[in-house]
Image 1 (cartoon, helix red, strand yellow):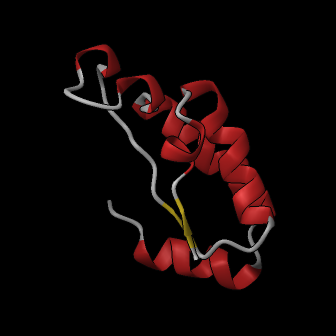
Image 2: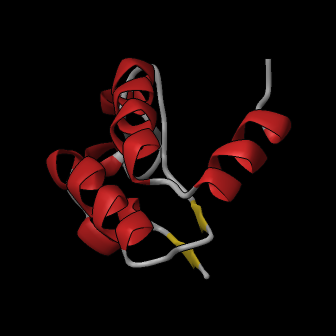
Length: 79
């Protein structure tokens, strides 16, 4: 199950809480809009996280992840 909190909420301020809830409910992945200048995005700017907010989101979901999910995240992360 992959959850798209950006489109589910449609509001930047709700993406992180929805991401946390999705992971807590057992989602296998998240699909999140990120843009360095959301106001200039061609679409979906109102729901796009700034890169710093994406980092905040990852830090917010880490404590919720199971050990297996944490291992897969670390093994598959992009450097």
